[in-house]
Image (cartoon, rainbow, N blue to C red):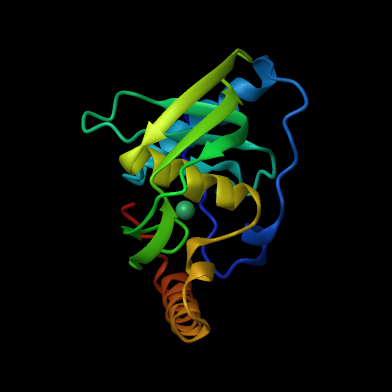
Length: 178
Ligand code: NI
């Protein structure tokens, strides 16, 4: 399964809005497998199709310790979000090395199709709830650093642009862990 290239902030393609998947069929399966392989390889807990430059409403997640409980959400919709919100530290495979606090609902209910096109409802709290909200933001073209102050965001942008120039010179790829 090929490992896909993950777009890095501030790549403008991260701000494209994903379109719904029209048909969950066999043709979609290799992309799902490649996204899972890419997420595991990068030691991430979630990956949105947007991050691999595919602008369809598809995300993969695995928040298990054992890394053996893959979750595939196609055309996900948050049908309920708790009024209770909490600030937690987040990172992103598209923003390597940067972690900062983002406020999210502590619990959400999501309806989505699984990889076989079967409707599923997921009641999530804790890390899974955070991850679902983070990945669904990606599908809307939103990266978590956009919740931070403009000052912080600009610092991050400058740092990442500099690193990417250095990586391009040295031939090193992204180093993201989450
Ligand atoms: Ni992310």
